[in-house]
Image (tube, rainbow, N blue to C red; front, side, top):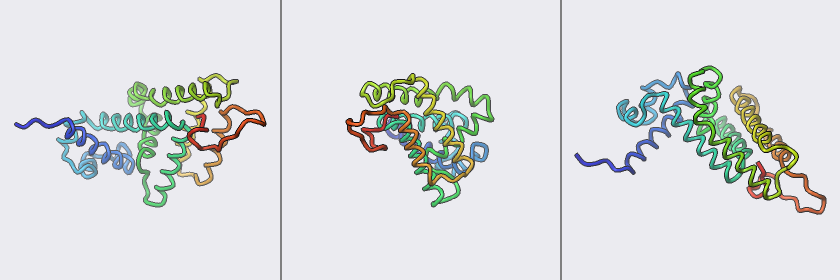
Length: 213
């Protein structure tokens, strides 16, 4: 029997994750039945669960995959940029359909299950450090560069930004208006940066070079 290449296995795993992401976003965890997962991925039950032990493992892998993607954005542009991306996803969703796309849908479902499923909460705790670690390292670099306020401990700033993120996710989960939240995120970004002297150059909020968070 010919040996399946690693590239083929990786591509099949990505196909499952991409299809499952939309399925969980549209139907929620409970509503994402095996039949719906088969339809969303274009693969059979056997093919899906050859790569993932069960639906719980598939969802955790998907959530972890999105957390890694978010951490990459944080490392380059800060946690506030993740929030801006979530807002952009929400605006796109409201135009294109009744369910959230890409990582917003996964994040909403993670937040729901964290509130209602103690077993999931325990398993997710093992996988949720990427974003916190990336945020703290980003803040450390920005403080060293002189862009971040230095009168508040880094741990407090990290917790502040994570609380804002969770508040934004809850806001979007409730379907509340979000079109005017861009200036709110500008304020969040402004609140963590170092206040410069009048003769120091001021960079535009939202730019990767400027953004301290």
